[in-house]
Length: 248
Image (tube, rainbow, N blue to C red; front, side):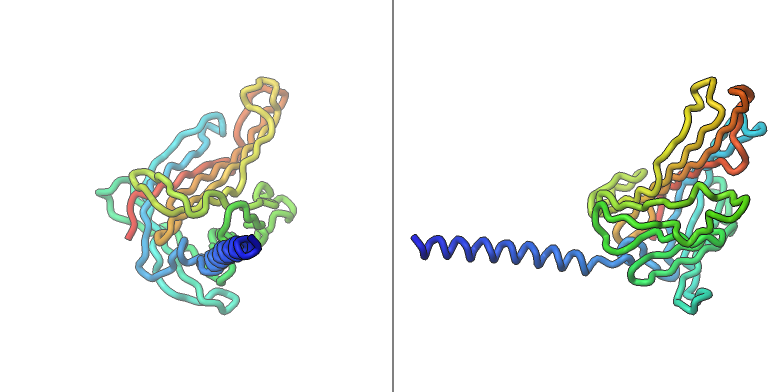
């Protein structure tokens, strides 16, 4: 009986050790480059739905485009680190020629993926790649200066969800993805006629193994209605949705 119990104990310990070893291996071998490949010539094309507010902020309209993000060259950032220049091209429909309209920069530090857009440095991804891990993704962005128009970006907690799970993105069935929930908050209710102020901030991104960013949704709005009348969305309110339609 003692020998049997000893055998069972050893078996349980071996199974536990094996599971622990596998967990540790998985924890250490996942690389940020797996979900955001930085290679010259790599591109992803998206359908871009852009929400803007018109008529002095009293109504909204959605314009749709195609945009392509292509990794163009290996360069050096202002800290002397290897970085990749990414050029965005845009067109209205797929028969139109591409026109470049913006340039970005991405740096894989090993522990984080930095993305510079409009002089803002975002920490898009960060180790470890596991569910519920969170970090301050906008920590390099100045949100405190006087008359700053981007205070709404302050103190965002980026959180991983569904790491390694499949996703349906547009027409693509992707076997291994992860989601980064960045913000989901609202204040006030514009459907209430007595509302004098409301604000909505929402941001989420999805990345696919071996491909990169496959989906992005961002929306920021600030609504003001002095006295509950003649309400309008202030300048700077907008939204974008990127859905992958092609990649190499």
